Image 1 (cartoon, rainbow, N blue to C red):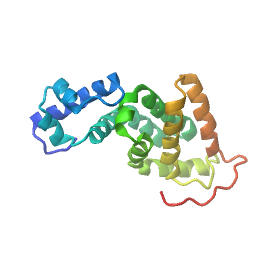
Image 2: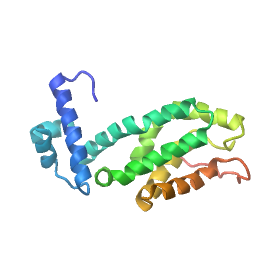
Image 3: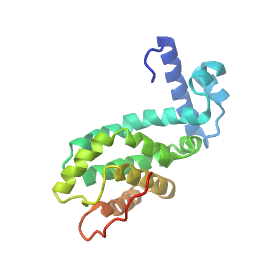
Length: 194
């Protein structure tokens, strides 16, 4: 949330985000901005002043969810000597959010891209853990830190929509993360520009 806003503006934004999450959760992402403004107790002009379109509003709602549910796991990942197990937890949490927040996902438009952007904010977390994991022989030596957000975003794209059983989802996420293991890994082709 932007600093320098008056307290009443900050309170309006919080009410808008809370209402948007409820409205998105109740439907398929097509809840009108008028309905969100009404539920938030603000005028439509106030909503548009802070969030000019549905995608920006959905992005802000997802950012709040990401901050409260994913960022603590990313902090744990930064301290971890068992990066694969924490990455599995992160991937599972992201897939759980995608499954649980289907209306929000529909309003976002491109969940994997937004997820990768949010994960990219933590690039300084991935690099040292990657180096430690590679030095310990737990992560393949040809990985780069930028691979991690992309792998996690792919998990959201694939499993969030396809598998809604928690145990099955964790199984397939675990299989996917086996690609990070250096044992018997084939050399990776050069990466293109993302």
